[in-house]
Length: 275
Ligand SMILES: C[S@@+](CC[C@H](N)C(=O)[O-])C[C@H]1O[C@@H](n2cnc3c(N)ncnc32)[C@H](O)[C@@H]1O
Image 1: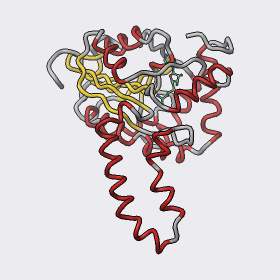
Image 2: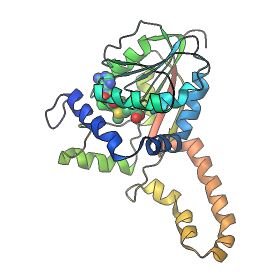
Image 3: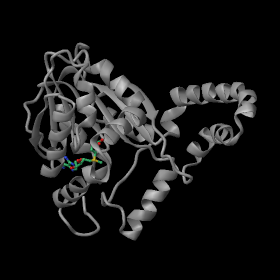
Image 4: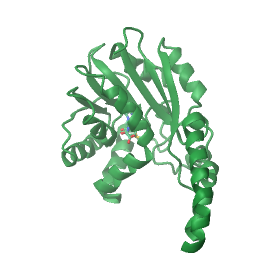
């Protein structure tokens, strides 16, 4: 991965994590994860419950908020967060203390995860694979540490969004803080896992980029925007329309979110008896 400003990856990520908590409070950050990533966390929790006694590992954990939020679901499985950035791990430690979720945190490279082969029951990464021009070895390494029948959940930015367009504009201008970054279609993500011998279990999408630059979000919030601007008396008449509109979008998000939402996640299983 070649950062545009020439700085090594660890310095660039350290810089981002150093600013992270000063921009918003821990509570605001936690609320953002709970709300924006609700579908991701719900599906992940279902797998986390079955991981014990093997560990649950988040690769490229950064703040490790997702891992902390999952910890309650793990029925005693150890929770391990791995990241290249020491500053990221400091942030993770503060969230782990605030949420009183004990995590094992260790500095490590996603190309050589410091864990034994076959030692994990669930491995996941969110917003990590897109940072590598060749993501295959990084995914293979995540699969290596899983026990037979273990589950790998990989979440990355979905390709067909206004966010992708805006991100590449910023990358070209050299103003994207994360450096170079790619994106995946649900098909390319699925094929990548299958090329490593992993079995696909499900693919789903979640979250919107809450911006006027995101057509899916502008449409999703259209009726809500009108409703919020109407006087209370009129909003009574709009309510049934707005409820029907919400139900339609919820169904589209469940069924086709992997082709229009901000993130796409794939759940793979390592061949072997299901856990
Ligand atoms: C966009 S952040 C995602 C953080 C977290 N997963 C989340 O969803 O909030 C990407 C993370 O990957 C980490 N990272 C980047 N390259 C890495 C590598 N080679 N090995 C381990 N972690 C890496 C960065 O330090 C950063 O914390």
